[in-house]
Length: 346
Image 1 (cartoon, one colour):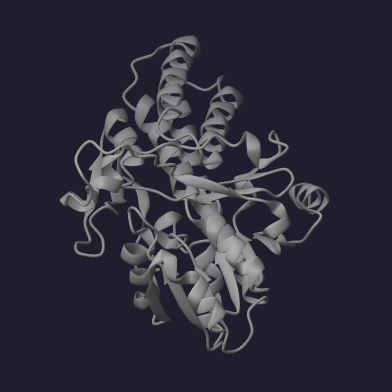
Image 2: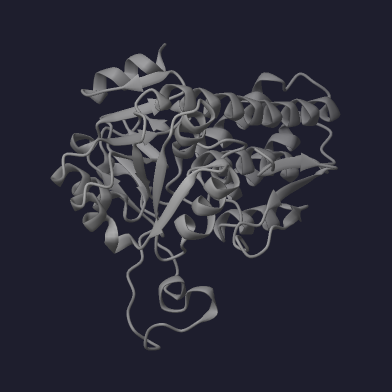
């Protein structure tokens, strides 16, 4: 990719402010915990893998200027930082996975002098970034085998390089197929209410030279009925042990439509998105967003003031509607309770 979504730069976190795209491509810098917390909460950085990276780098930011002289004092500051970051967004499991990994790294290196311990945590965060890049590329390679020549893919929300460190999950499948010379096309849902599909996915696909057509969310059934779609590929923010999948609100709608039209529905996500602590998707916490995102998105009032709003950020697609789950370790198929566990242990 021609851009880096999020990285450590001169003792700060540098990231693309995705709330400004596609009108403005701008990097911003977070130099304290409140600023990276706000960046995650306000979707300046978003997408499950990228949120995990933000959490890892945010942990480093939280302890980087620590004056602690003992591990116990340092651990107290570390715990405060991770607990604070954990309150930013509840649904993407990668956030909690990254925070746990950083905590474990500190525990494993507690014998080091504090300056070296800080460096060990930074190294771990940068390792997470490099692993994410490799995982995304592998997802793309496995996923493109499911696409046929001249297929048109429908995708929802944004699961590209902007949602990860480099290459994407769902869009990695399309990038890889395109780079391999397969003639494919993509239909992108706009993804109400914040238009991640319209603003981000179409921008990324156009940057890559992939034929993309934007549609409103409520047009998906019609384009499927017209035979324009051969498969659906989406990302995921959390996948339960049975394969139930949480993704951006509206994904469940697309899955229902795909099933009704006999169209394969694929989920692309790294194994870090699997949450075996949850047996089913009924246990996945669903983030509720501010009413203003619906009533006056992008600064323009589109509903009567004072109207009640219900705005869940995610929905859960039942495993029964998922044809396959594409990870960096391969393609898992039903029954997911067995195939995902085997893949995790591979």
